[in-house]
Length: 225
Length: 246
Image 1 (cartoon, rainbow over the protein chains, first blue to last red):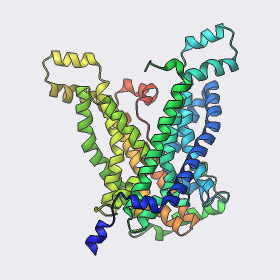
Image 2 (cartoon, rainbow over the protein chains, first blue to last red; image 1 turned 180 degrees about the vertical axis):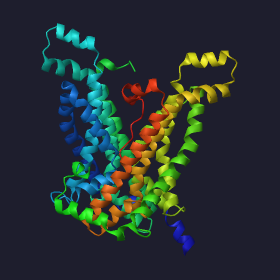
Image 3 (cartoon, helix red, strand yellow; image 1 turned 60 degrees about the vertical axis):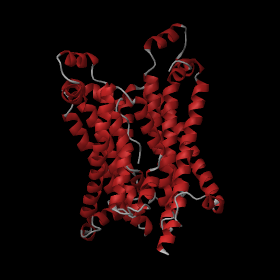
Image 4 (cartoon, rainbow over the protein chains, first blue to last red; image 1 turned 120 degrees about the vertical axis):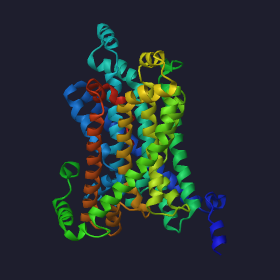
């Protein structure tokens, strides 16, 4: 029986996928929604913050310092800080809040680096052509910083896909829920592996899509790198 | 410190402090000192294994000037792999769950930052210096060991710091799949719906991560020659592959 039991616990099983299609689809949808919401909310906060830190130079140091410290804190500890708050608890909001913080940090850092990397002569040329501050930002500085900003969006998205799994501690971990269920269900290897592979595939899919979007958004940079 | 990170309601925070002051939580195999020791032991072993694998490979690739694309691919793909997935997969192998499976899974995640930084460190060495060394009749091996390696030490230290901080953070997750370390306090807290314990565990884990980061930043600083320190803090910062949240 033990030998048969060993053999009956394969890492890959198409039967598992067919029998659990509903659970897999549900987990995948949850995972995608958590990721997309996280990155969108993080972008809404990060872009204005980075632009502020770019405008007011004294802000850049504290903003980057704070991001560095927060980034060092493990996700499980961050969820442990958020979950005990009455407004959060064991809810989806707790996961979202924690993930937004991490995504925020990458986005702020890359956006700021992109803006600071705009060559001074480009800015001077735009100023010489009569561009005001706002128009310079929209028409010159942000487009020039776009590759760096998009690189940040890609890193933030891929790390978010991986981090969502940790949300399982508060009960909302997308594929992480299946990974842990497989572990607790007597090391159900097919479940652990299928959910893991799908998570990695999801992250890489987002990465490829965003790389394509970056190419489409920066036609002038094509063929250069 | 903890207040700045999480404005918890005073009652929970107060209870967390009570938890931290309870001598019972500092004794035995589930006490804070033993779990901290276990956490550091797991992390140290993982980083050591990763260094043994990654550093010779990175030095060789950097010396030969090959495999730049390879190191980039390794670090990109590793970002997409959830730590929890790898920890669980290793725990479900015949190695069995527990600290050994954890150490191997964590070592896998420590390889990319060590590899990338050491590779870049060797590649970044001024070509003129390498040419001069060759001109003086040094063999390829001597160039690597006596010129490129010493000059790459600051970036190797940077990679070591990134890897170690990431491993200490990631080791927390081992508790979810039967491993040891400080993460246990948090996962047990979640299991028992014990808010003060959850928060106390969070504080301990965060402190350990920050202490590791601070200590290794000092180490990195001490092995970086004076003139490069400033550039290390500013422009060069970008060279250091940033850690992924864990």
